[in-house]
Structure formats: C-alpha cells, structure tokens
Amino acid sequence: MPEGHTIHRLAADHRERFGGRPVRVSSPQGKFADSAALLDGATLETAEAHGKHLFLGFPRDEWIHIHLGLFGKVNFGDTADAPAPPPTDTVRLRLAAPDAYVDLRGPTTCALVTDAEKQAIHDRLGPDPLRTGDDPDKAWRRISKSRTTVAALLMDQKVIAGVGNVYRAEVLFRHGIDPYRAGRDLTRREWDAMWTDLIGLMREGVRLNRIDTVRPEHTPEAMGRPPRVDDHGGEVYVYRRSHQPCHICGGEIRTADLAARNLFWCPGCQSS
Image (cartoon, rainbow, N blue to C red; front, side):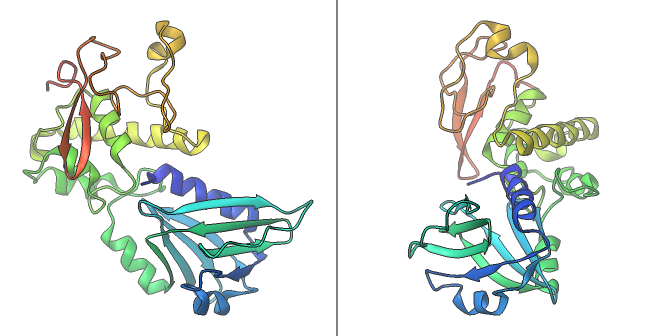
C-alpha cells in the first residue's frame, strides 16, 4: 500500500496537470459513472492529501475521495502530441484535459463526497507529518497513554496518518527505539525527534518519489558497499533486509509479524 508521501506527490501532480482547468470526467468501468457525469466539464479547483487519502476538489464543495488501498494504481499520460489511448474497462476514473489525462484503477475507495463528509474523514485521522499545521500533540496524547507497542501505534492511521511499514521500521531504527516498547514508555523528547525526522524523510520522499532513509555517512558510496536492489527502491537500514547485516553494528536484521504487517528491526541498535 502506498505510504503518505506517494499520496501527497499524487496531489501535487493533479494540481500541476489539471489545477484550475475544466476536465472531462468519465468512468469506463462504470462504478463511478453517475458521479462522473455530475462532474464532467467542471473545473478541478484543487487536490490535497491527508495520510493515505487523496481528495480532488470541484465547485459546489464536491470532492472525489480516493484511497488506493493495496491494489490501486494511478497513471498519468501526456496528450500534447497524440490523443489519449482508449481507456480499458478496468479504469474506474479518467480525468482528461487537452494535453494530459490520468487513469485510476483498482482503488479501495473512489467516491463523490461533500465538504462535511470530507471533514469527517479528516476528523478520524491522526496528524500527517506532511500537512502544514498538523499538531503532533494530538498523536502524543494517544501514544503517551497507550500500552500498545510503539510499532503498532505508528501504523495506526487514527494516531498518525501517512506512516506505513517502511517509514515505521526506518524511523524506529534511526532513533534506536525497540519496536516492542509500549507507547506510554516513549519520552516526549523521543516523540518530538521522531515527528521532526518523519517530516524531513517524507518531504524527501515527495521530492524524489521514493523512500531513502540512510544518513549520508551510510550510503553505498560512503561505506563502499553495493547499492540496495529492491522493487521498492531507495536506501534503507532495516526494511526488507531480514537476515542481512546491519549497516551500523553488523548484527543480523530481524523480522516478525506485528499489527498484521512484517516488522523489521536491529536488536543491537534498537535496544532502548
């Protein structure tokens, strides 16, 4: 499932290509056809993200709410020199302008919602490190009282929005925190440092469109090691590196199931 930086990147891509312009809206698959007909020819006024939720804003306070889930895919195309190819019958939503189009396939959610319905979604989500003005105190109030492991809390979108399995594993490693510590055993200083780190890491994720979490002194070039080869791309400390040596201590990276996802950590570096 895409993490929050990907959704913020998608919001920016929609604004860049279609923002302030009338768009053709269709649903070749048919599941969004009635709503698409209501929006066809309307101006896409804005696009924004909160955690893993994407919102496309139209006049009359109408929004397309998109959650990609595990299987959703978004594909942009340029039609400045050639027309858009005919959409396949798997396309849930197509937006098109004279010089660009975008197709959405396989999302968990693609629904037309009102301002009030959109606000209800925001209200049930935790603060997002990529949303300017989101308050980390809201997350801290829940974390500081919880017996749940900090690793599970970081994946709970009601606690903090946008953090997925990669950022969870990597931020815990970067701060030397045992993933099995209870949230209430985390100090406020540790939480503030993690929040600040997530802001920086996820902003870089938006900029580069991939997740890189290793510090400059631990890059392949600095350490003289081979670069990581993985479908997810990016240089990481522990994510999907089970049974490999830690870049810092040389110990074996461990993996276990936690909160229905694979957790990765280094027992040697994450003992506190």
